Length: 339
Image (tube, rainbow, N blue to C red):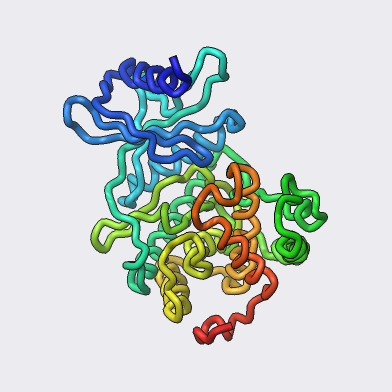
């Protein structure tokens, strides 16, 4: 039997053991975690099963993610609800193959909604800002109450290795891009390290709140994939949302001159829920540059080649251009004037 069929059978057995007979199993994501969409045979509500990679063996970050999601649902936010087993446990152990180590898994309610690309506008970003403010308000409460059981960082890229030119696989990059990535990483190492880590600027964040993790139901904004959550600057969640709007090089819609208004709407929405950190624009700019480097890191670590996705080669060219221009002039960017 092929490995894929063995994995699917093992997954179906795990679900049947909990009384959830699946009529259909579809793998909908395979980046860091594997995510399966489960349609029950009884026609009831759908579920999602997130299976963490073997390297994520420490349960504490997952337990913190689960605690945050449960609290957010209780607070009325549009996020998936973790589903406990018959013994009240949220984390499962799943063995994909007899010869491979077990992996942690969590069952979640399937979150309805649509992603927005061309339809994203300042009003949508204002709603995302308010939603992000509520995320941070809930996580701050959990931190104060001691309900977050991990010290994991949401941003853990080794910028020092990038600055030194020793990041794994970095030699595969085109020479000019490699040089610009090293230069920017060196600058970011100092800049990010200088940002405040007080309660106003630092907390437990989503870590990857990009366009494809945001779901809308009419005017309501919500989010999925909290698997990268951890401690970090609050600005990281703003930068994650703005990343592919500021750098529309993944085949997504280019907002063009509307970008400054969209960025400002995101921050305004957040400010309606809780105070913005001091110096937020500079912090967002820095994390936008950092996310460019992290995207390169992802391509080097997980892609079989830079052409694995159609937008890969074009992104490399655009990334070199953007990194060469960093630090960007915020006043020019705000005006919408071309660079």
